[in-house]
Image 1: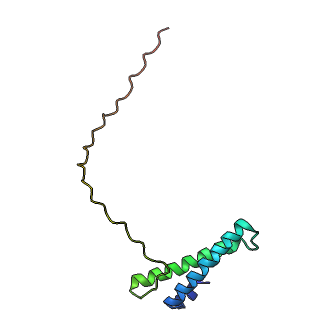
Image 2 (image 1 turned 120 degrees about the vertical axis):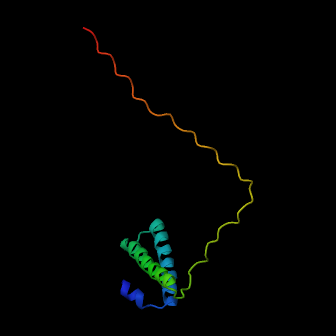
Image 3 (image 1 turned 30 degrees about the horizontal axis):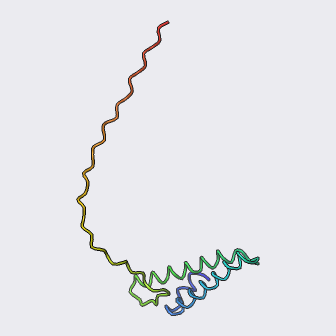
Length: 107
C-alpha cells in the first residue's frame, strides 16, 4: 500500500483497513511465537501500512475532516483532591573548589 492509495481512501475505508491490518498483525505475532511464519517481513510491512493509515487519519483530523476513530479515546483519570504541600526551597550547592597541588618531593 502506498501513500497515494491511502490518500484516495475515504475515512471509513481507512478505519476499516486499519482494523483489518491490526487483526492480521495480531495473528502474525501469535504465529511467530507458536509456529513458523512463512514471510517474516510481513510483520514490518503491515506495521508500516498501519502507520501510513494513522498518519493520513491524523492529517485529516487536523485539517478538520471527520475521521472515525478505531479505538475509544483515552480519558485522564479524575484528579484527586490533595492538600498541596509547599514546594521545598532548593538549597544552593557549594561551589567546587580545586584540589590543592601536591608538594614536590624533595630529593
